[in-house]
Length: 395
Image (cartoon, rainbow, N blue to C red):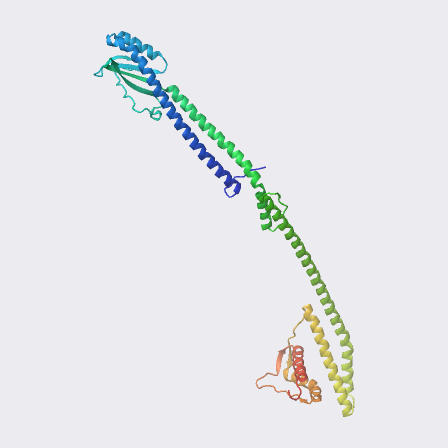
């Protein structure tokens, strides 16, 4: 189990919000506790002063009225020796010091505090200054000045403040740990979903299954696993279809190569006897024949040459499928090639009652550089289609 703090994660944001709320509540609690503590300690100091003043007055009124300042000094010194009183001074109605204990003679007396507040007590000299009039049977004989030592109260206040801060920090740390554990158990499935989604985004269509459960996040994990299984099955189907298509393509290519090989082989096998037929017909035409026999022999030659052209077309088709077609660059006579081609189709056109004419425009060169065999193929196809789809007339 590991924790990674990042404001981009839901877990970290929940933890941060919880800590901020906890810190805010603890700050308010500590501040209110300190306010109540200050109020209570201030009231305690005021009550202590109110309790001490009558006791001191009762002890000094009799000797003071008899001007027995030695006895008054002894009472003040004895009272100052008691822990909790820092100084005692008695002044007459004119403000002159009569008796003093614990306060320097050359130093002015501090002004008494009106509406005592613990927040106004200085840390270097924690003291509560009090001034009480000395009243003897309705006659003011002077004033009693004394200062209460608040060092113990201030130390207790500081200790309580430090303890409150320490308790608040411990509470925040414990809350952070508790919220971290709670956030981990609530969002650990989200982390697994995030890693699985990133794996899918990087091309892994079959990520490992994520945890499932009965809560909302667990149901989300179950839905993700179902989607992952569906995607995996679809990927397998597509892979099989691709492989099958590849195999079919390879089979089709093999069949095409076999067909091309067969056509090329058959073309070569047929060309050999056809060359013999054409050669023997040429020899026959060179002998003495009657006009009718000469016509028959010429038709045989033209038909053999036409069949040879068809054989060459088949051979060219196999070369085209194999990507091995080549174009020749030789000198030839265009007019002779057109005349020979028209003469070849002349008997076929006459048998259908069609007149086959040839016209060559002015400015057309006779001697050209190119592939006469390919050009003859084009003309043969054009004239053959023209004769086939013409009922009567001239072409």
